Amino acid sequence: MKEQYSLQKLCKDDWYILKKIRLEALLLDAQSFGSSYERESAYAEIHWREFIGDRRDRAIFILKDGAVVIGMTGIVKSRDERDEAILIASYIRNEYRRIGLSMMLYQARLNWAKAENIPSVIVSHRESNLASKMANQKFGFQYTCEQNKTWSDGVTEKEIFYRLALR
Image (cartoon, rainbow, N blue to C red; front, side):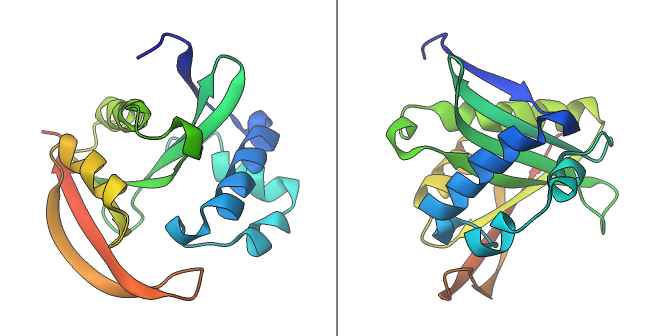
């Protein structure tokens, strides 16, 4: 993989970077998310700042090609389970897919979870999102369960859940 690709962990003052790439993701790849462009484009600056936060319960990363932001991802500590974190909000621009960049996103989030001493990580995806399935399987995530979900595009399709033990 070219050395031109890098990850940057965002702080709340980077809210405008997150807003731009998140809205792009929702506009161009809406079927992959549980939210919508319409909802999030109305969010005020304070929402974006709080989403990133300066708390220890989450990390939001952007993926860059040189200085150009081409993707994003995040991880948050579970509210329900003290010993879990959840992978969220992954997106890579279409022209940068299928070249291994999702591995950088996974590794950054797993490194963060390990540094926070979190014993397991969960991830889910829409049943038809086979790229997400392949990526999490490369890291050893194990199937746990599935449930029907009505996604932001109005389609009802299974959401598949996986877990990875980190220790």
